[in-house]
Amino acid sequence: MITEQLSNQIQRKSSPLVTVAMPIYNAGKYLRLAVLSIVSQTFTDWELLIIDDGSTDNALNTIADINDKRIRILKDGENIGLAARLNEAIDLAQGQYLARMDGDDASYPERLMRQIEVLQNDSKLDLVAVRLLTIDENNKPTGLLPSALTHNEICAKPWRGFYLPHPTWMGKIEWFRKYRYAIPASYFCEDQELLTRSYCESKFFTIDEILFAYRIRANVDQRKLAKTRCAVLGVQLRHFSSSHQWHFLFFATVAFFGKLTSDLLKRTVRVSFYRHGILDDTSASQCNKILSDILTGSKIP
Image (cartoon, rainbow, N blue to C red; front, top):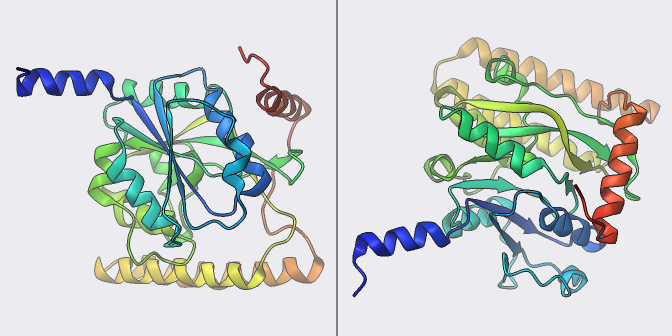
């Protein structure tokens, strides 16, 4: 007869260290690269939860030949939204850490390993992100997005939002289970809502290495962008008013109108809505090779 203590030890030993949560909705042709980028990780003690949120594009068929026992696919035919699916992943996770992953991006091979190293070397950290570059629909590197590295830098101006790219998060499962994603979710800003609600009692960090390729589509839905801006402002106003941070509330309102004005100007002159930094040739070349190796199944050192 197995004692409760021995049973718990067996469970801990058989459970992966990291659970990768990948909710998907019509990920299309990009899903295969995203999944293979996890399969290609140098860190191997993970499970991948692919949770389909009522997709209609049969994208799961593109990964049917990837036979990896660490991958779990869940599909119930319903469309309930990203935040709800992420909470499902939090409840189902067997790992000590939860990592985020979108169905149209790509993780560099060292991503999980580097995040695990950082989290285990600093027990005070709750959430760790990585720097990323952007790619287009054809996997071509296009630029860099802004990044903040230390907790103080990330949280310096909460009324402007938090530069902590959601698809690159890895954190303690206890942290995710404590805060969870708000339901009903704020419109396409569930990550900012969670960070706004938790940053005063948490510690964040961004690894100063490009370890992720983030896909940006050519066409920006301007109505969706405006609604997201409004949703973020609503989150901020509720939080700052409840905590009596009236100066933050004022700054958030000013920042909101500043972003709307910037969006209007960008639309008028037809430039990108995303602030791309300059991408050097070495980073672009490295990205091209990594993505090519992932897709072709080449061994990645």
